[in-house]
Image: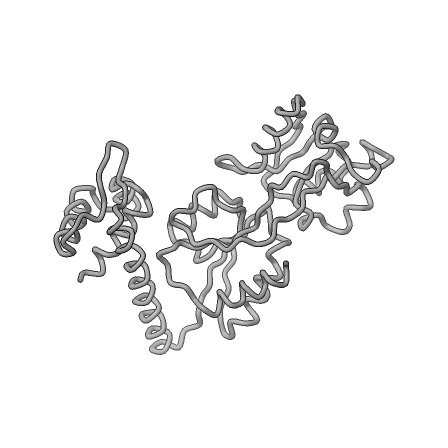
Length: 296
């Protein structure tokens, strides 16, 4: 059985469309359709059904897809191990980390480095939407970011949700709210909020939640990373924000109040993400599960 056909089939299933798969694979659509037909002829049954908007995987096709991803993973692992032995090269692990959870995931990256002896770690920090694109284009091996809305082509391990807190400038409120601040009250303050570069994210969730409470939020600045939001407020801007508790730096309490929010928004979901079809390193998964247990 041709491994290239297996790979093409997996990409078609993951993309949900032959045309999208063709663009991702950088080949024209007719040859890709022909490879799929050849694979179905070889198997002896239809693996997908075509419709006006794309393809749907048949029951037989889904069983075959799951087996095919295992085969491709095992082949890639064997190739990588053989290459490492032949060239004595260090393992390279490319990790994408979201701005939203940079402080949260830093200890995990350090643990990966310590446990994968001799490995070279390459990191890139960006927003979740950018990292999803990089993962799909295989420019990173794993992503540590906000849980994706669509997880069909991903293998995800969810971490414990991170509590959302309000960061309020002491210039804005010299006396901190007692115990907590109502979400509606927070929404009435001048806000600096975290916003993705592309697509919807926590910014849109917060904005819509406040609108449902009858509050039109006064967002004076948006930024794509918590560190920038904290620096802006700490620099003297009389404003407030909402962010993951994990990303609040200790020094900011000199200029800001850190306050719980009621009702508590459950919106920050740090997640380990990889493409389902890429090889799985058991050592890396063991490190992740150990880290997950510590967080819980």
